[in-house]
Length: 414
Image 1 (spheres, rainbow, N blue to C red):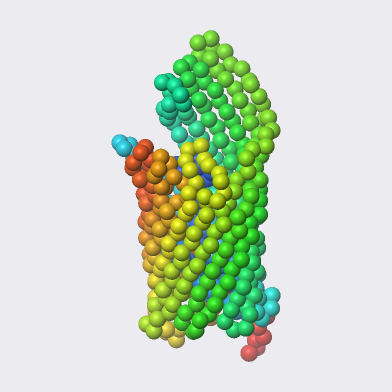
Image 2 (cartoon, helix red, strand yellow):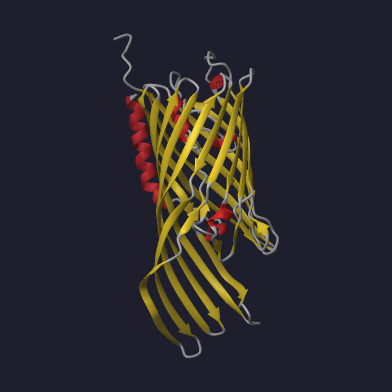
């Protein structure tokens, strides 16, 4: 146990030192708060990011706070993870490749009574890292055009606190609060003829989002789950500096410097997710989730597109041999999954959807606990080559370490 605590501390220090370096280079991160992170705890990444109905027994389940109600006594769970993404972007006739590393989460959970437990986690919520060069756009109600150059960086962080309580033996309820905070830096140059206007803007965001969850263990092989995320208002403000340059006269002028503005807040929608988990006799576990996000009800829009209701489908299969197997290789768990997301933005009447397939293994760290190293490979596509959009193909390798420590148990032998 002492060695695992030391290892957890090292992972924590490594994670915290690299947290600020987490990036997502997707061009779609220019929209809204940026590209949203898919932080998968435990082995959820390998089953298509599904698991609303799974209990937090062998690892922390961040998809449903009610899962904490089924956490085993005297167990302390710790989870840290990251991922590498190799992407290629296609926009006829050009193709570009980018690679980046993301540190996805840091979490811990522990019981506070025989029927309840709490968890705390820190993870990125979104990332706005993009670069646009020499994009020619038409001027509204005019035959002329202008050239846009833009770069963005930053994003929001998500600090989560969850509590789950079991009622009887088969039902659990949970509640969680997500504290979102961060800033996005946006720099843009607008060129019209010989005149260039530069706008440097930093937007600041903060807000809280609450969630309610429930799980029902129908029998020893089947469970159902539901998770409801409340609609939330994310407060926003910005500081802005504006300068202009005239190429004809070779003169520049500062219009404003670090001016403070109140801007329109960002709204997160009501989100309802349901899931089912079923274990078959041959030790195959099937999971399936469906989530609906009501973005239309937020009554907001983006300068580049329109917010629309979002549907997410996730499913996965995992296989493991009986627990009494002693061989290490026989204790490895294998999994595969599928995920489809319709997206919540529509640009020129075209959805920015996302689809991915995943394969993964869960490698045991030691015999007597649930500690495991989870490794997942995913291939996915986002967007499409149509109406001037960009198609993103990506290969993703997710790695996370789930540690399980058994505390406050008396030794049987000295």
